[in-house]
Amino acid sequence: MYDIAVVGIGPAGANFLRLVDTERYSVAAIDKKAMDGSGGYRKPCGGLLAPDAQRALAKLNLSLPGDVIASPQIFYVKTIDLDSEITKNYQRFYINIDRQKFDVWMMSMIPQSVDVFERAMVRSIREEDGVYRIEVCRGGEVQVIEAKHVIGADGANGIVSRCFFGKTERNLRLSVQEWYEMSNREPVFSCVFDSENCDSYSWFLSKNRSFVFGGAYEIDGASQSFANLKEKLEGHGICLDSPVRREACLVYRLRTPSDFCVGGGSVLMIGEAAGFVSPSSYEGISGALDSSCLLSEVFNDSDEDVLRRYRRTTRGMRRKYTVKIVKSRILNNNLLRKLIMKSGVQSLEIAKQRETGGSSEGLADLTLYNK
Image 1 (cartoon, rainbow, N blue to C red):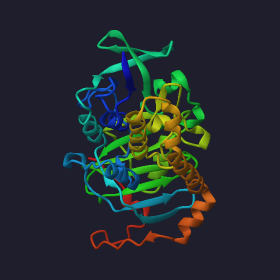
Image 2 (tube, rainbow, N blue to C red; image 1 turned 120 degrees about the vertical axis):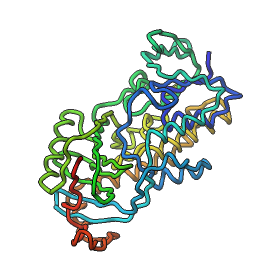
Image 3 (cartoon, rainbow, N blue to C red; image 1 turned 30 degrees about the vertical axis):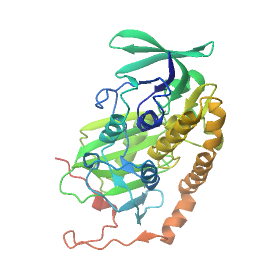
Image 4 (tube, helix red, strand yellow; image 1 turned 90 degrees about the horizontal axis):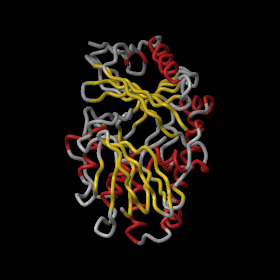
């Protein structure tokens, strides 16, 4: 029997495994994908490290290896409001990364003392007399892993949440993302507001000779909303034809402070599974790193009364994300967003380019011509 079993080895799970004292605790980790990143699925993530994520990496004394960084690095975001037909540019400091390589890099730091069950599907988890029995299917064979503590690091609608806490559909969105070949266009990062099809925003992003378009939509009718938005953008000169790859998964939409779930009993939740994800941008790497670091510190101090102490140490995080809830409500209010963008506060004027003979303010400058 293990002291700790971690379900999910994304950034949250991998960071916890890297930091928890594996000489003190026997630890198992379970994930659908292999340690080289193959198998499982590709998370439909824009792949940008926001300032909060950069700060979290700095606190952990981690520096990105070169092969994780994607090209180009873009220093502003073009914000397009299809409701008000206003477009503004704002300076932002994100690091463009290859998300799959980032995850593999995080997994590479898991100590060899951790027993990793890769390419494994968790079928059920149940508690019997203080012991958690995790039924795992791997390579067609079923085995049971027993543990004193279970760490849910398996995302928005993972099996740990479903078995012990549940997630209402009102808190879930379907993230859909498509990849296109990109030719003869300038690098760009844009977010698009369109309340008719999306209650947050969608994104455009140049990444390693590709162009990514994605967003998070209500589950019912998500594919239609995605298609509707693409069609609407075509009317503004943005052509999104012939995707080379399509990705989708459920993501968590934080709506109220009561939506946080840090655990119950000896089941602890970290990262997106706990609700630590931005309600406006769905940025979750910073929450994954911060929450997993806090939980590892709690365990490294003592395995007594873990849940109470973890709740206490995450108060600051929950307050921060509560502020983000307020911010998201402002950004997603059509009138307030229109007033903010119309005011031009903190916006940038982009210099005209001689090659194009015009301003980069117009929507047509984002037109894609696929090979």
